[in-house]
Amino acid sequence: MDLQRLATASRLANIDAFHVMELAKQANELERAGRHIIHMGIGEPDFTAAEPVVRAAEAAMRRGVTQYTGALGIHALREAIAGYYKTMYGLEIPARRVIVTAGASGALLLACAVLVEIGAEVLMPDPSYPCNRHFVAAFDGAARMIPSGPAERFQLTAAQVEANWNERTRGVLLASPSNPTGTSILPDELARILQAVRARQGFAILDEIYQGLSYDAPPVSALSLDDNVVTVNSFSKYFNMTGWRLGWLVVPDALVADFEKVAQNLFICASAVAQHAALACFTPEAMAIYDERKAEFRRRRDLIVPALESLGLHVPVMPDGAFYVYADCRGVNHAAAGDADRLTQAMLHDAGVVLVPGQDFGPHTARDYIRVSYATSRRNIEEAMARLQKLFR
Image: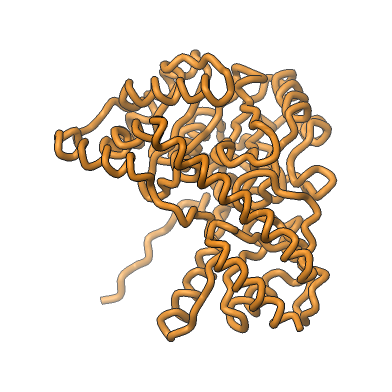
């Protein structure tokens, strides 16, 4: 008997497939066929959870703290995160404003559930992390992608906010440092953006998950500029705990109860074991490990940027955070120059190197740019660059 295909919600038309996962699937097939593939596509640290965190997880399981927690997270972890803001930024953030979530994705979903009205427009730069616009679409809002190039550091500017705000606009969703570009919003510009949003009684959601990996200047949290922003952070990137699915929000006092109500219904709570393990992230032993890993990421950045330039992959803005480089592919010596999709296919199939075309991140830079993740060893980076040099000859 033929099964009838169920009708799906119309909002799915506004949610695109994630092209990076298609490339990863192709790479896996090549590996199964015996090819050696260097993965520089998916944004995941090659480091795993620090040993103190692993020990804390084992201890938590043996103590039996594996049951539901409160929807806002365990108090000790919320206190520890508040202390982290004091240490890292010099900010006094009350623990009651910290909400522990099921990863940064869970945090962004909660923020959109609370703040995005049906039909509301949310401004974000093009290029942006693709899931950000899909989080907005999931709650029947509309992401408005504003073309942002090297002159804007691939970020939204206050002038763009003012020029593009209309009667449907309700807020902005930004990331600093950014995926895919690794660039930060400069503090003075961020202050002007937040002022422009506040003057229009809008909301600002700031994804700060890569701020622990800021290389050229101390990071500036949006919370130091405006108490009304909603910031998103995560244990995935700086703390190297991607699969543990643990993140957090800092929200204005007046919105805590609203976020708690939605979290209770959508997620119940984040993983109890992951929460207890994450307490160890803030110990001196663990922080020393993270500092050394951060230094290694910086060494990788300083290795890969000139290597890409030598291949004709121009880097118009030096990435100052995260572990990504956004490179212009129009100058390479290859038939697919200026066609990022075709070029990354050639890189994969002819050189065995996985990179990501710009099409995932918005139409403005889709054909001309590729994203390079240097979340892999320096040995892999050197081998990948040698393979690409041979390809471009």
